Image 1 (spheres, rainbow, N blue to C red):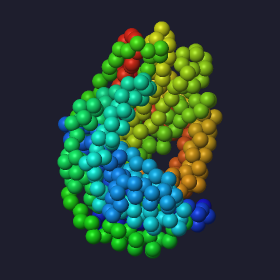
Image 2: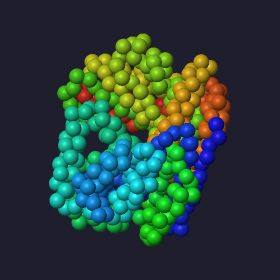
Image 3: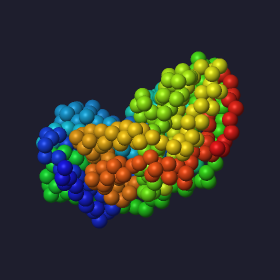
Length: 413
């Protein structure tokens, strides 16, 4: 399938990406600004998360209600989220409404009201989300796992903490906005039934006069993985495991993804068959690969009855460590089928394509073609995955547990 992918970087540093998909009648867009939670002031952890909520409450000539009605009137299915480095704004609508929708978002990003009278409502939502984390043991253990595995400030959770959220002022929010919302390294990504020259001219008109200012990347502290147990009276002991892998720009990236696919991804994956099915130690068990620009990790989760949690942890670690001892051809074929299926489905979704292009540009400085990804998937073999695992074996685990009793484990292989 021929892809029509376009790219243009404006003088102020904003990059526009687009893929023309003439067979659809919709268009999706992703706007990302370098203002993620890694930039939160230490005394105001959770600021970026509240800003992503407050920034949608009035912009340009429209107050909160008028802005919401305008977006709804265009049929925009919208979302906002906060990552470590970037804050994301996304939407999808009919292709004919793309221009007006992008005009509204230019107001949101460049001329938000950040109304003081709306701060308490946004703060209340943030505090409720933090309190909800205490009632969600799986999410809680994964937040704590990342906090202990990643170096600061890459170990932050966008929800922040109660002290930071409670202390937040409108002046702190506005100061953060003024400092970090600017066009340098901003990415606008659009996929759907688009006209490239018109889209490029529109983005030039909406953002071309926005002057950039220098913003340094956050200082990343030293790695300091540390395992921990948190005691809580639960019916199931929650277990989070993390270990280093290779990032997306590494030659071994697809082999690393293949290895995680052998472990997790369907009812015939090893963690499911060897830990859940054979021994009945847990209901849920899974692993995923997380990549940043310069580092990556494999993150695993499982949970089981406290009286069998020690065995659950040991058998899970055993499966991770024995992966390098050999992989079957049928396991790789299953992984390839899953990756290709996911690739095809992303190709058919305007929202997924807009997000994927933005992610590729941020992580790699280019957009991968379908052919490149397909070739990499086709190139996977038991030998290539095992060779990667021998170079980069699962070891030096960070383990965080939440439950009635502490579990015994070693940090290494």
